[in-house]
Length: 77
Image (tube, rainbow, N blue to C red; front, side, top):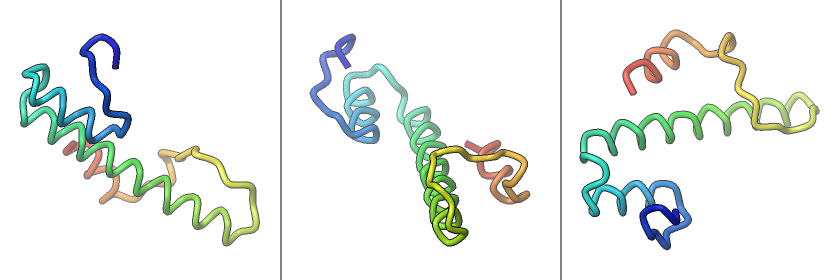
């Protein structure tokens, strides 16, 4: 990120660097990281299901296909 002179390319490492620089509060960093990791897990699960169904893989997550627990996780994040 040029704005904050970060060399990190990994999203979670960038969040950590921003926290160390005082740009993000640790609690906000944790919230963002939790939401990010949840979305990655949802995306991976969707991609596995897409492959199993013999369809072309994409990164789309249909919110209407999320279960109650998954929606609650995202709301909590």
